[in-house]
Image (cartoon, rainbow, N blue to C red; front, side):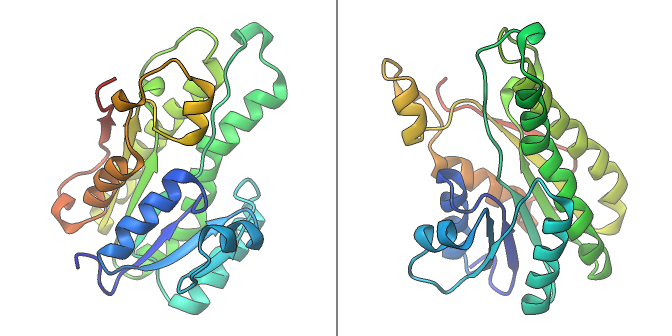
Length: 232
């Protein structure tokens, strides 16, 4: 039970990856604080209860601050922050990318990391340390046609990870991220029916890497962007 006595906050907890990450930490004894857009969505994803479910608009810094404050009143501290929330859009070249798509990708993928850092890092500093793991993507390593907004947003996650790691490593806080390729989700199977999902990354396999980076076994790892690409 590697995380017994630890409080783990998972954003995007009602999504496919969020549920896999939450389940992995639960198996290792963690107490879970689960963030997603509304109470109905969270209760549908976790009908058995037993966790602290907190509705939040991750795009709104004020909503994030209130949600974290609510959680801390219940649990006192956050030991691990797993920034799982995010999204994907593609299909337009850069010059034709709608402003709303650009803003959504930057805010949903990178802005949520910023908003959570503002709200959670002070508590980790006050309690002497913690672990932060975020979801970047291999698309953040280089530009690809019709993926400019998404790739830029995931590159921003990598740069934020590196910056926070440099700022917080001497304070007992490890900050790292993972870079999946295509995750095997029902949505991706529906969108790419001719592809072979056996080559993709299973959510549970990605959760294992996230859990490693959040563990004491990764205490010497700071600012890493770990590729998790399966067979793709």
